[in-house]
Amino acid sequence: MADRRTNSLFDPTAVPEVTADSLEAVVASAKSIDDKRKHGTALLSDAQAYLDAGSPETATRLFEEAKKLDTEVAQSLKVADAVKGYSEGRHLPQNDTPVVEGEEYNADDNKRLYSASHKPAGWIRNFPAAVQPKWVREQMGDTQKEENEIYKKAFSFWMRDRSHNGENFWRNGNPIYIRAMEEGTDAEGGYLVPEDWRDELIHDPGLPGSVIRPRTTVVSTGRDAGNFPTFGSVTWAGIAEEAAFTSAESTPTIGQVAFTIWKTGGLVRASTELLQDEAHNLPAVLSQVFNEAKGRYEDEQVIGGDGTTEIEGIRSTAAADVVMASATAIVALDVHELYWTLPAQFRTNATMYTTSSLMQQLGGIGSTSAGQTFGEDLTAAPGDTFLGRPTALFDGTGWDSATAIAANEELGALGDFRNYYLIDRVGISIKRNDSLYMGNGQVGFFAEARGDGRVGLTNAFRILKAAAS
Image (cartoon, rainbow, N blue to C red; front, side):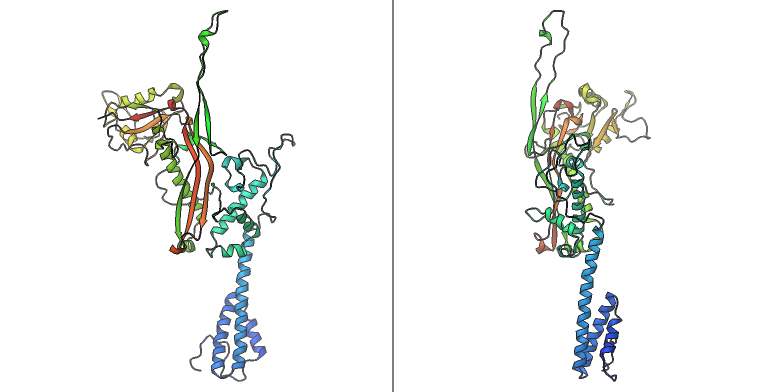
C-alpha cells in the first residue's frame, strides 16, 4: 500500500475498517462545492485502495458515497446558474412579456397622450417593439416600451451564454427572458435586436462616418416605396385697379421625387474561442462597429450613389457644376464663384461637403498682392468653415481625391442639405447564427438595415469641379 494516493481520507491498513459513523462524519464535513469535489476524489482513491487490499465491501461503500457527492456537486452548480439568471432579471416585472394588442390613442381620455399599449401610426405588424423604427418607439405606449427593454436585456444575456450554444440560457434563464427571445425568433433562427445599443468603448473607429446625416432631412416610412410631391413657386405682381389678374396668373410646377427602399448590411464571423474569452459587452461592440460602417457607407452613397440599385448621390443628379479655372489647382476666385453661384435662398443654411485634402488645398491659397488668404491666423481650426458656412468632411470613397487635383475631378459640393432626404424603413437589426459556420468553429453575426436617400431639389446644390485638361 506504499503507493496509495496522499489525498486519501481513510487508511486501509488501519484497524478497524471504515464504519458507517466514520464515513458519515467524513461526508458531512464537506460543505462547499470545492470540498465535495475534493472529498469525492479522495473517496474514489480510497475505494481503489481498499479494493486492492481485499476489502470490497468497504470499497463499495466509499464508491457509492463518492457518486453521491458528485451528484450533489452537479445539482449545486445547476441551482447556482439558475439563481444567478433569476437574480440578474428579478428587477424586471415577473409577469409574461407584455405583448398587448388593441388599445389605441383616444383624444378624449383625460388628455393622456398615449394609452399603455398604444401602437402609433407606422407600427410594423409582426415585429416586436424592439425593432420598430426609432420614431415609432419614441411614441409607443409604456407597455410597449417595457417590452422593448425586456428584449434588449434578454438578447444581452443570451449573447453572454457561457455554453455558446444557448443551452444554459434555455435551461436556466429567467422565464421572462426566454419568453422574449421566443417571441423575437425569425424564420432563419436569428434574433431581432434594437438599433440603439450604446456603450463606451475605446477602439479604432476607422474613417469618421455619419458626417452628413445630421444635416439632411431624415424621415421614416412604413412602406417599401413612395413619393415626395414637389410644388413650384407662383408669380406675384402688381395689378391696376379694376384690371384683370393676367399679369399675376401662373401655374406652379407640380412633380414628385420617388424613392425605393434598399437593403444594406454586413457580416462578422467570430471564432468560438473569441466568444469564450471575450470580456467586453459583445452586443454593444457589434452595434457600435456596425453603425459606424453603416454611417461611412451612407456618407459615400449621398455623394456617389447611382439612384438605381442604391440610394441617390448628388453626383448622379442634375446638380450644376461650378468649373474651376484650372485643371490642377484651386484659387480664391473659384471659391467665390462656388459660393455666389449657389442661389441666395440656399446659402444661409448651406454646408460644404468635401474632403480633408481639398481643405488642405484651400489652406494654401494666399496672395499678398491680391489680399486673399484662406485663414488669417493659426488660432482657429482651419477647416471648420468655408466662407462662413460649416463643413462636413468625409475622406472615404466618394469625392475625388484632392491631394493632387486632376482634370474633371469633382471635389465637393456646397448646398442646403435639408433638401437631401434620408428615408429610414427599419433600423439596424442583428442576427446571430450558431450553425452556418459551425464547421469552421465560428458564429456568424448578421446586421442589416433598409432605407433610401433622394435629392429633393437639385438647385439647392453646386458641385465644385476641376477644369478639363
